[in-house]
Length: 521
Image (tube, rainbow, N blue to C red; front, side):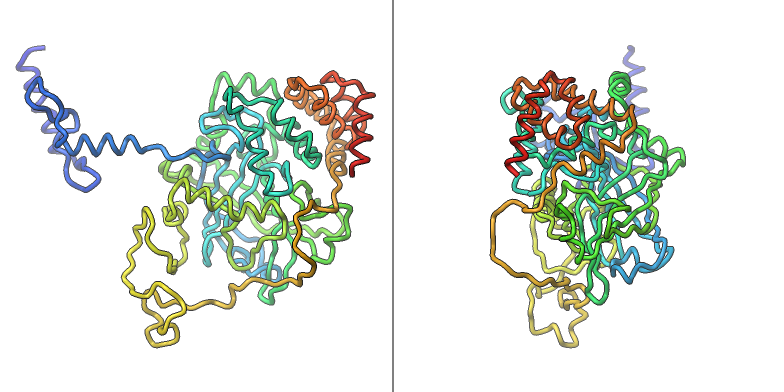
């Protein structure tokens, strides 16, 4: 290239930069003079530490990644709205359900549970289905999965379960020998394994799967009377799943087919929707079953005695976030994020998640994560919480404690002078007995897995056996294989026989283990 050409190009670049409508700046707002070349000590000298734009640019780049979620690492979010079908204030004082046609803005994050942030979306895994309602009275996070139950019933076992499902700490490979070893000692996992290894474990798209709150919660009305409730999102697109063959084909073509499908449909103006169903149980019914209905390994059905089903409203997703990281990655959900009218039940797994989910976000995003735009409540926020990394709230009060001498004075409308609202107090229940550390007494591990199996079509049963055997067949220990198959056999004999044949476990061995499991109950 000639010197005159280069000189002309340089002049053109200067003109482009000076005539640009928007000037590139540093994070301090100062204009950037040269974003192409580092400052050096002469033409052949070293780069100078005083090039503060270079230092800031590299330091900021070094910190672009935040810790990956331990679970629900891979996901995609979208904006939308929820519209209530009626006034349900007789059941709950929760803001979204106070009037027919009431609109509440939402943000939804779909995800896989066990696999890493960069994993293929074809892998068999429960799918997270987390909805943040930006209500008039603060945020409500309904945090669940596409499947209606979970593997375990006590939060004490959650770290162990996740460790078994995650890659081997020595080889960094996920290993069925490890997770089936864990599940062999937890017969309550049979229900979840049955639905996970059905085709529901590999949904075709995020749009074409149902969602479930999994846990029982409490609906509390203005008289502080409560009923237990489970939530279910029913896809208005229908439910569609992929088979093992489908996933093998897709995985080689599209690493992120579920995210791509969701965002392409939204950009094209095709807005997916779900109806929110409430399954309601009166507290007087809790002890009328052969199992504890507050157990997260147990599902509720609309045709189950003592259950009333109501369709509360419809959620429609209508917008792709402007920035994936700021919304999908920085969105933070926790079942502890509730509004008046929604309370936790005594579900042992839920009780642990109330702490764990909020705490993991404090670790990932910092203690002020609730003030990020995607997490910030649309209603007014008045709190005495103080300082911490990333605190950019504008506070100007001397009063950051309570009680104080100003609460009942004429100064009570000033910043920092807040009063309690008796409407937001919790409901109460009568307690008796002593503290304990014992397993739930009323269990029926195999009733519902058998019901699920018997409701399946011929093809669905065949796919369940094929999917299940693909992983269980890799387990080297005959004892572990036999124990898992025995749990299936106790759920339904046909289920157990077919699975035993598929993973080479003698039926006599299965029956022997099943007899032993029954004696241990």
